[in-house]
Structures are given as C-alpha cells and as structure tokens.
Length: 611
Image 1: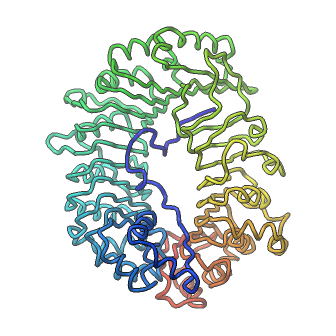
Image 2 (image 1 turned 180 degrees about the horizontal axis):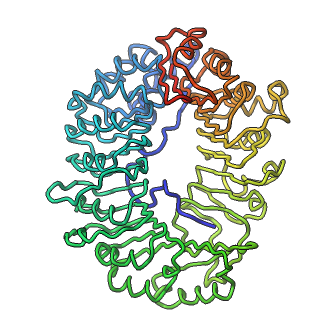
Image 3 (image 1 turned 180 degrees about the vertical axis):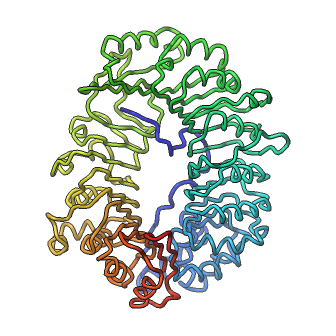
C-alpha cells in the first residue's frame, strides 16, 4: 500500500542541499604522520574539501591547524554555509566571533535549529543588512515572538531567495507569518510548517501586496478557502505543494480575479473534501497545469474516470503527468474484486493508455471493514511507500514495478511483509517500522536488506509498542550511516548493560554507527539512559523522557565527560515530575560551571540543556 507523505516535497526543483540535513564528515588528521601530505595538496583541492563540509566543521578541523590553513579559510571567496545543530556551546562563541563575523559578507546559507543560537543570531539581525550574500535561510524550532522579529528584519536582505520555517509554537498566528513572508522582496522558494492553530485571524485577499514567490510548499493544514486567499498573493507561482484538510465556502473570494498564468505543477493532498468542492477550484486555477499529484480520500467520485476525463480535457489541456492516489475506508465491505475490476476497466480506455497513465487498485478486507487504495503506477512517482499486509490486487494492464527509484521513505507497517516483499527501494534514505503486535525476534529474522540498502539510511524510526534492544542492534549493524534514530519505546529486560558491553560484536557495531540524534518517546529509567548512550557513542543530541526518581542521576551522568558522552552537547528532557529551575541549576553545578550550560525550562515538565 502506498501513500503520499505530508512532509515530502514531491516535485519542487529547489536547492535540496539547503533543505537536507548536513551529514557530519569526520576527517582524521594526524599532525605527526600526515601533516606534510596534507600540506602538499594544492589550494584548489583544499577548497574542494571546504565546499563539501559545513563551515562549523571546517573551522573545527582547519582553523587552528596552522597559519597556512587559517589563511585559506579567512581569505577565501567561497560562500559560507553553516548548520547550527552541529555546534556545541563551548565552540559556538569562538566560531561565531573568529570565523563568521569577519566573513559575514560570505555567508550564503544558514540553518538555525538550536533555540539558544537562534537568540544569538537574532541579536545580530538588528543589523541584518550586513548579511549581504545570504540566499538560503532555514529556521527550525523557533517560537512565534522570535519568528516575528526575525521576519521583520529579513526585508533588508536583497538576495534572500530560499526560506524554510518550522515552528510548532501553539501561539503561532499563521496569518501574521504569511503576511510577513509575502513582503520579502526577492523570495523565490518558500517552505512552511506551522502549528495548526485555528484561532488565527483570517488572511485578507491581496490587493496590491504581491509576492515574488515561485515555489511554495505549505505542510501545515489549510482550508480550500484559505488556499484561494494565499494564491492571491503569489501571481508568479510556478509550483505548489499543499495540504487541504477541510472546506468551507466564502462567497467573497469568488468576486476576486486571481490570475496564475505560470502555475504548472501542483501537489495537493485533500482530506475529507469532495470532488464537487474541488472541481470549481480546478476550473479556476489549473488551466496551465502540466503536472498534477493529487491525494484524496473517501469520496468515490474521485474514481469516476469519465468525470476526470471531462475535467482534464476542459480545464487541464496541457496536463502531462496525472498522478492520483485515492483511499477509501468502509465498514460495509463496499469494495470487492468485481467492483475493483470494473473500476480498472474504466481507467483502461484509450484516453488513459495513450497518455501512458496507468493505475492499479488494492483492497484489504477485514472482519467488519475494508480499506482500498487506487493509485498511479508505471512509473510510481511518489517518495513515500507503505508495506502493509498483503492486499488483494486487481488485474492490471501492465506489471507492477518492483524497483521503485523515486521512493525516499519506506514505511513497513507489518513486519511479516518483509519476508515476502518483491519490492526494492534503491534510493531510500529513511525507514519506519511500525507494528502494534509484539512478536519477539520477528524483526531480526526478516531480511530488511533485501528491500533497502541499509548502508544508505540516514534516519530510522522504530514505531511499534515494544522495541527490544536486540532489534535495535540488528538494524544498526547494517545501517552504519544512520544519523537519526527515533524509538517509540525501549525494552531492556533481556539484555543488561554489562552483557551488552562485553560483546565484541556489539562493541564493533557501536564504534561504527554514526547516530548523532536520538529521540525516545517512552519513559526511560537511568539504566536505560546509560544503555542508549552506550549504543550511540557519537551522540550529539538526545531527546528523552525520564522518570522523576531517575532525573537527577541521568542529568549528572549525561553532563559528565565519559567515553560514551564525550560528543554529547544537546539535551531535551521531559520529566514525570515538576522541573524546578533552582534544583536543576544545583544538579548542573555538581558536574559543570553554570556558565558552561545554557538552560531553558518549558512549562513544568520539560527543559533544554546546551553546553
């Protein structure tokens, strides 16, 4: 079964390098043995290395190596791109003062994800005009007040063309954010993911304040009516990715003329919106459309081949790619093999085959319900693929693909599907495994490597209820380039810390894995925290929930400089009891100086630490 992932950008030809996580690259330089060899490299080769690395890593590796490399750093004309998630507090001030400020005219890309560094950078944005070459800005985990201040100063940036914002502040007023973004004079690419706050004041139709945006991606939900208002601000729009989750009618919007002569690509996810409501929207805005990716649910009018044919011929005459995915959940077994085949026959006429638009239909029948999915194939174009229980498949005019090159994220919904899976995902970098049924050892026996090249995975999510340590070890043994690991829970009864440490095979795996970001959603004991950092000796960021009785011990252990925590510098902790700032400071004082650790307490039960 396949589905489109809300957070994916299916088509936008944007600067992907700015949107992707920057992989940490370790360069081991022995001053005594390889110093002269490195010195023999030409400046051109050294600059090629600089282009491949994040600026914070370049600074750490080369700045204090010798005068020659420091001069190459400081007097280069190469643009500077830096990711704040890679920087510890102990090195951030040096990096910012010694390298960024003297070269601020070279800064072309900034990725802000650390709440403390956001405040540091924000203070300098009072004089934002000095960032004359800034083209790409990615802001993650920012509160609404800081975001408003940030956006006010961005209007001074004459070269800013790419902006990505993730803010999950419950107080976020989306309309204010939209309006401030539409005022940015040179923006071309914009990706937004804001908290779904229905209390925001409605955005008004644009009259004379138009944006230069050509590529717009909004991952938070919007209404179809809200989308029409947003489109009034972007007359130059070429590509749009949007998530519409509800519909309400506003007659006022029908009276405004909105012309989108450049809009050629749309990826739209519609949830609980009928075809009757969508068709007027298509008639109004899709006349120049060449590529349509559409995900729908429940309303079976979306499976009406004759209606789609009429809509395409009348309102989308230039359409080259029609990629549809429709899901239907029923409690009366409304889909069976006969109706399934009838449906397929409707989409197998010359109108569809001449355009090379092919489809298939799958359905799963359960005791009191059924789930069906109709979707485009040959080629499969989406970046997300779900493997669930083996469905019933209608006969298709062509064979289903088994090598899906477009997929980047694979979701294994049922572990049992892995052993019989004939699919292969050569370009997948993210894996999610979720199975609510506890089945000891099943994951270990299933050949995941048959469907995904484990060595290229950068993110793994294990999302079922009981995750055993042995499961984690088995996956990480092959996925040594995984950067982020997310666990729904952790069970350690069958394997204690001592036995884990004694295994030479496990120690080899631990030393090889590259996990820098670990998130555990369930409550953990102090012993489990010790186990986690043993599993991930290169850990930099840890997000974990700790039982109140173990809170003090865990904080002290994680702040210590031991073999397993030597690279850790960022901590997001939830406690089962109240977190008092005075008590927290006293705990920190037992291991470090207060000025070494930045602390922010969120509410009563959560705190951030950065050192």
